[in-house]
Amino acid sequence: IMTGLYKEIRRLVATDNQGTAYKLQQKANRVITILKYYNYPAALRAALGFLGFECGDPRLPAVAFDKSKLENMKSELMEAGFEEITSM
Image (tube, rainbow, N blue to C red; front, side, top):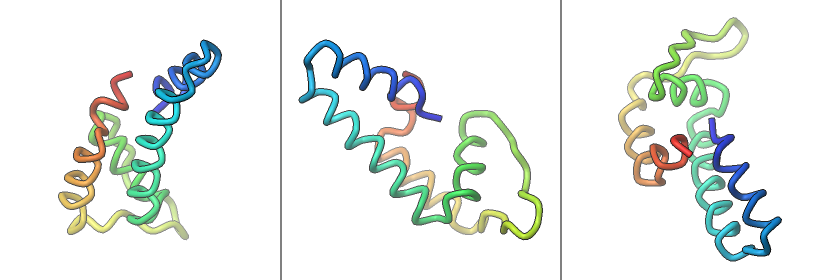
């Protein structure tokens, strides 16, 4: 979900702009940390839903995302710059 961000990080490193690349890596790390907190596989499916890709529930034995936590996760992701990151 963050392929554009990682491509930009790679481009920045190749052009000797490590400082900016590091800041972008920190943003990516924040998004990943949030997804891990909310059970990464299920949270990733929910995050893809924010981007318009409805993935449905996973097959067993994986557990579905707890819908009661959806707004909290979305709020945290938006604070972390999720929209900006995924639009790169």
